[in-house]
Length: 191
Image (cartoon, rainbow, N blue to C red; front, top):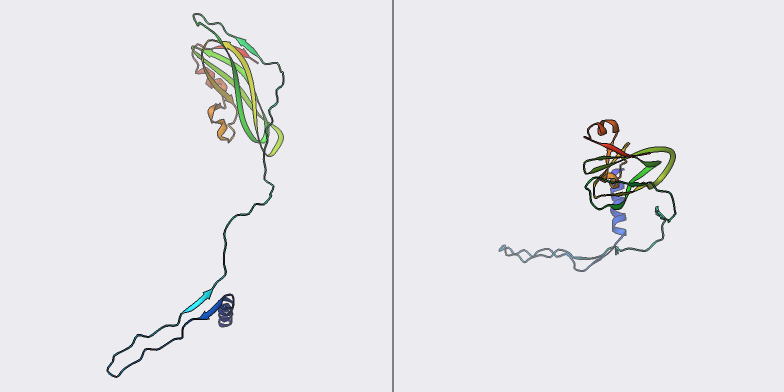
């Protein structure tokens, strides 16, 4: 059976190409004096299948998420901070964002804690029940702050979503432990 399959494979291989012999085989001429003339092996011209590699344009469906930003007037918390000997104030928008997947989430700024020249914007990220399917969603919250130039640091209570975008914020599970390490702090905003 194996011989039959092997013979069949050779027949299929040979029948899939066009073979034309170009020269006949010739054995070397042998002299008694042991002088030999070089022999010649047969040569073949083989036409094999022509293979072309390239690209073609096809219309296929690919998933895309489109985020449409619309302007809308809403009430945004506004905080005016006067610090002794602080000089000029500047209006800043403090925005916290997270990129989530899997399920819908909300993010809300809960507190702003001041200590020295630092402001800690403490937000809470909560997972909801609604599934997002394969979509990714960017969520945000913001507050307008009128204050002198201060170092702003964002702290988010909740589990950090597995998206590179979320690396710019610090995520904590125990906010009370974090706040206990802040020296001479004062809550200047609470929601």
